[in-house]
Image (cartoon, rainbow, N blue to C red; front, side, top):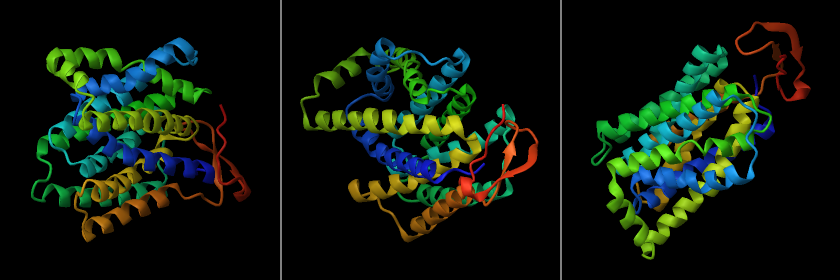
Length: 322
């Protein structure tokens, strides 16, 4: 199923915003403990959501699965990895393991099938990601094995959220994204109190009048407004109207933005080898999402295609019959 040009542009906007968000997370983690930061990130959206937004008519298991996978598992592991020395640029790379994890889970759970072109594109992008990861992990001061494994667990959590998001099939995707934020705050606050302690949490809140505190609040503001409300809102809409295997590859553009921004703003080095590998990532995403001249009508996720095709004039958007 090809992605219309408008939706491809929206997916690129998400990739750009999410790439920059790793810098915002880096700034926030200089002030707040990681688990408390996750709780804070989602609580500032969840409270007005409960008061002002009507819950979308989706089954609770998919809403909870979306919030737990995307909001809890992804960020508890990502923030913990970055707090334990995972370089910002490399974190943006390794987290994109969510794309193949999503494709695998969508095939197992939703019976979505990958075309040969999509498979080739994903493999090409993964080759680029693997090349950057191997190169960066071997550099002096690079990530140790533990933060890399933690970030991979975050990618798996994102994939779980993607599949739950896709299966919710809501006609109010932005409301679904808002209600997803209701899930993480309480479990993350409990985890923070148990492992990080009230003293560390209190110290982070009483020193916000410093330069570091101001930068942390600016980073949190970007994370909430740009990354969550805009980025996750658009991503939820895209996942609701396209197969997971079609949308997920766009996320592999995030590390290209994240590593570039980290090199410019945080002075993290980016070499010619990384630029070549990043070009492979971009090429793979373009290949796996390029519109086709004609796209088969699908009878549903994993069903056999009908004989009729959609002409090229429809931007290659397949129509699903339910």
